Image (cartoon, rainbow, N blue to C red):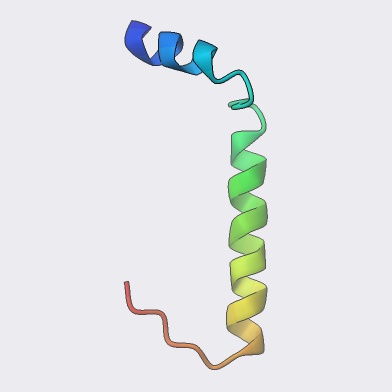
Length: 43
């Protein structure tokens, strides 16, 4: 965990408070794209 914190401190752009929002927005955009097209996502 200390290594992770050191890594994060080198990249102050990453805000872990904002991260869930970013992920939710990405998922929302993905769902819009998927609902607008008949894509079958193969994971």
